[in-house]
Image 1 (spheres, one colour):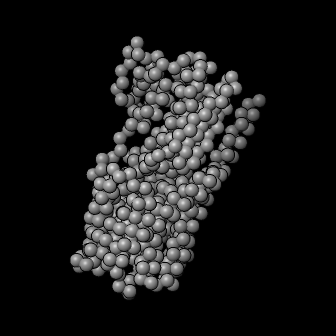
Image 2 (cartoon, one colour):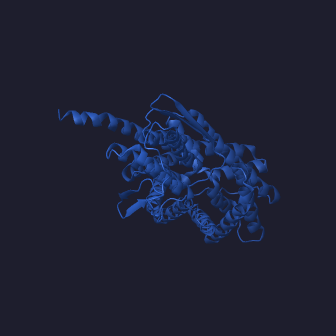
Image 3 (cartoon, rainbow, N blue to C red):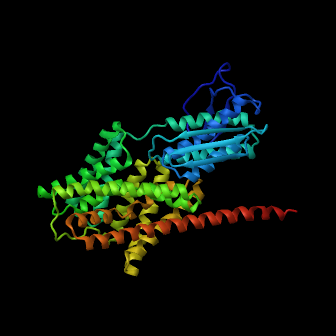
Length: 464
């Protein structure tokens, strides 16, 4: 983890825990005094708060509800309370434990604000793993682990986000890459770069208003549509389709889609359904915002679809890698994980191109690409001991049918109901194919994990 240089003094510190990591020694000190008697009411209350804070951090930063529940119960167990129960919805976190005296203690916290910070989710997940290992393998008492967990969670919560100017630049670069990836010209890509930067700057400027995700999507969609239409009016580009779609990709609800699928696969139907509705609301906001620009600057009736894919494999790989890396950056993924997430997304895009050309159906391409990203993400998650979401969310972004949403709204504004219906159906089919691909990969991963747990005890029987 990280060393903040905190010094410990004998009077203010109840315990100092020194552990050795792969690179350095870390001293954690200045912990609050915890009663060494685990039957203490104060100690029990503190442990409930620690476990609840872990779930709250996961949910606030874009994690799945089932992951928040599993992390809370795992940390509570590591701190000496195996009898615990967690219940999480997208807006509420609740934890209940039963102590040695049979008394139940419950905490409930409403989630008032949410963002996307996959780096914090990975660090909470790592903390949960290390606490479990220390409590079982090293047999460290819970009263020593509790202050360690409290200090680390506080440090994770206080870790700073990226500076706004770098997030603006990452959004602009992602828009640039998507424009070229969707077979746009260099002029269109440069216009997308500028519009992407302006759109993200405007959203940062409006952030003190604490707008809902629907309003943010609607404002972002309106800015993109208006600026792209202005580019057409000024004669800079011939059509707004490629530029609008490229920049809209920065606002598609990729996290909500992935979390909805993984929550449903985990059996949490209530949270999964809520996530699906959240993704639909964000997509509706983007469509309504985009419609504003289309009303003010009507597109000619002879509009040619801008949903195209660059066929050259090498350039497509490089552009998909750059776009995925940009998303991974402003999702706060570490530099090391950013490389693997970007590689998964770029290779997945090549699989999409191959499958779409082989079957003559983009739907097959979406399914194959999403399945590949899901499988590689699960492999990376197992190998690097990180949540699979860290790799799936950025890797799946190039597949999200933002272009289909835009053109469905475009044809509806033009009054071409038949074309809007066909495009809308194709968009929903693409989204369903992506969902099935991710769901299949997640299901296979969970099946293999359960088989591994069943086989592991059998191996120990050989020694008897």
